[in-house]
Every structure is written in structure tokens, then in C-alpha cells.
Length: 530
Image (cartoon, rainbow, N blue to C red):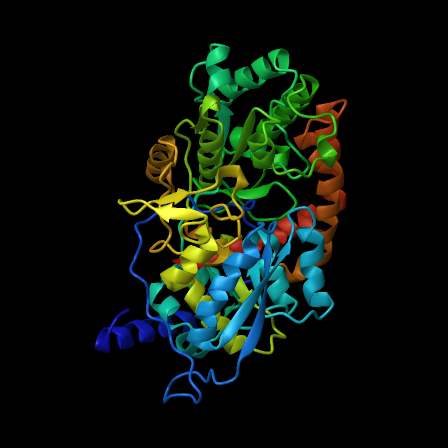
């Protein structure tokens, strides 16, 4: 931590950044859920405040013990209780509090998340993200406004560490309702395959989607016991791999294809669902479905694609770089004969760094202990002991540190707490997140390549205020679920007719009104940047 005048200067600067006006407002409907992709060397542990019987001067009062409840998205690992027992031993000593993590599974979080607030459930902290309608929930009063005074008082370490632009991105109508992750990440998709099978069928290392298709075709024709690519209704990877290598889109209007191409600084909206590229994508997905690249019951499949691969049920997986890298490491730890590999199919296409609001934590507006919740979050983000526990598990049981400062996971698929399995993305920080010892060699190469191709655009910080089009957005969501998902999985008799129907239904649902509103806000945002 900074000392003396430097600390005061940092706190003052953070407060100034937070207090400044921003033209951002509303909901940032960014891309699908992703994890961060770069590891940084460990920083030394930050000192944490100690609980006391009475508050010290200028120190928060922690004399009363409190029990905090935190909601996360994901599936709780087996050893979650053991890990948080250790967390709570520290937290009880440091801020006289304990924390209980609760999980909303991937299969039903979309339905259950808004009910947490609608039913008035008693809890304190909650994972929040632009892809999970952060702005819309903030507009509804779900989250507590986080003022500069609160953050400087209860999260001093975070205020020193957080990039100023992260606070700007977290603003909804000039107010902050999230403590975002400060970790830079890419939202792009990579694929993992079994190298033994790729070599068996004489397929060269994968560089393009066409190469990946050759691999899937070989599996479909020759490996009846394996699903080539175990896609499900929530699968977004194929669109990323095929469409996003031509565009560099930032989704603006959720549940549609309306985006900006970040290579274009004019801010002109593009409805990707109406482009020739999307039509060709729909045709390809219908073809892949007919060839049996995924299950005939794909629309009902809720198994995460990585889980299917690691269980030996499928021959490939796709997702963000970090998650797939962890999957490859686990596969090779348990099945070295698979020779699992990681490939980037973007082939030099432009990329971009995600907004920091892709992962974060908010405070429930009805929390009875918001101050202690912020103090707990400050510890999770910045104190290495807390960070290591919630990210890697218990040292010696779930992981060990190598001599060169890397994390070696223990236990393989039998581990009760795999790396990142406790859904800690909301408090990931660059200083404390460590590289994996058995990280595939391709990880760093892909990361470096994407960093070179990353484009900058002021519209990365634009967030859409959905206040005037809430009804239309709800209607668009229903259209996407009914008409777009079957196209994504190729479960259509005529892909051309299916795309035309999708776009007609979007129009009926009021997409044009939403586009007009979004374009007006984008133009105003860009004007404000001049």
C-alpha cells in the first residue's frame, strides 16, 4: 500500500475520478460471459484492518459481528465449505465478519437472478456483470449506489488499485453500482481438441474454422462413442468463431445482433442478423447439425461444453482463453494420452479488450451491512490470503505454488476445488492472479497475438440506457429464445427462411425503435468525446 502523501494523493484522485461527470448511462449489453485471460506475477499480501472492541479514530466500526451472504453464478464445488471455513477464520479476525457464498447454477441463473431482488431476499453481495443486465438491474434499484466517500472509507485498497476507466464503465446514469474486476480480458473464443485424435486422422494444427470443421467431420465419421462438439442451447462459441472473425462487434442491443464494429469509429450500428455473413453462418450451422457434429437433443442440453469434454464424452470444446486453458491443463493432467491442445481460429482478425464490467460485485440495495460487505470485498480483491483461497483453494490440498511463482493444481478431476471453480471472477485483480504451472504453451502465444490485434475505440466505454425501450427489449429476448437459438444449433429445415423469419419477428418486436434510440445515444456519446 502507498504511504503518506502518496496514499492521500491516490485517494483524492480516485474520489475525483468517481465524482466526475460521465455521459455513460444504462445497460451495457456486452458479449457473453467470459473469464479473464492473462496471468500476472503475485503481489505481496496487503495488510488488512483488524477488528476491535471499539472503533479507532477514522477507522470503520467493526465491534459488532456480522454474517454476510453473497450470491455467485455457477455451480458450487464440493469443497466450497472447507475453503470458506478458512476464509472466515481470517475474516472474523480482520473485520469481525463471516461470509456465506450461495450459488445460482448456470442452468437457471437467468431466471433466478432477478428474483433475488423481486422477492426481497436478505443478502449482501452479489455477482454483477454487463452480460447479466447490470444496467437494467441498477435502474430497477437492485443495487446500492457506491459513493466516493463509501469507497474511500471501506475499500481503500481497491481505490488505489482500480483503473479509472473501470469506474467510468461502471456508471449508470452517472452513479456507480458495481465494483468491477480490474483484470483485462478478451471475449474471444478458442477451441480445445484432442491432439491424439487430430494426429490419428492426419489433420494439421488448426488455424481456421475450416480446419476445425475437418476435425469435427473426422470425429463424426470415425468415433461413434464421442460427440464431436457437445453444443447446447446456451452455446455462443460458433458465432464468435465464424462471424466475429469478420466483424469486431461490441453488442449494443441485447438479444439481437445489433452491434458496432469497433474497427469503425463512426459508431454506426450494424444488425449482424441481416448481413450476408449471418446468412452463411446459419447455412453452415444447419449443415453441421445434419452431419451430427452435436447431439440431436442439443436444444435441451445444459451440460457445460468443457464438462462434457473433460468427462470424455466429446472431442472438442470452445470458450474463452482462460477457461479453455484450465480445461486443457486438467485434461492433460488426468488423460495425458489425449494430448489435449488449444487453438486460436481468429487467424489474425482484430480483437478488443473487454470492458471491466464484464465481471464485478454489487451490494444489495437492501443489505443490512453494506459497509462490512465493502470491507469484505476489499479483502477478497486485494489480500493475497483471501484471494488465493477463493481462487485456488487450500494450499497443499487443492494447489501448491511452484518455485517460480506459478499455481500447480492438485487432484485433477477429483479435486474438490479446481482453479476458479468457486466463481471468484468478480474480484479478480491483475496483481494477484497467477499463471498456471501446466498452462498450455499456446496460452501465452494467443494472448500476445490478441494484444497486438486489439483495437481501441471510445465506444468500448459506451453503455446503453434502456429506460425508454424496456418493453421492446423484453419482446426481443423472447424472439431470440424462440427463433435465434434454433438457427445457432442448425435445428431448422430451411436456414434461409429461418433467418428471414427471425428478422421479421425482430421487427415486429420493435427492434427499429430500439435501434433508433441506441443510435441517438451513441451519436451523443461520441459528440461528448470531442
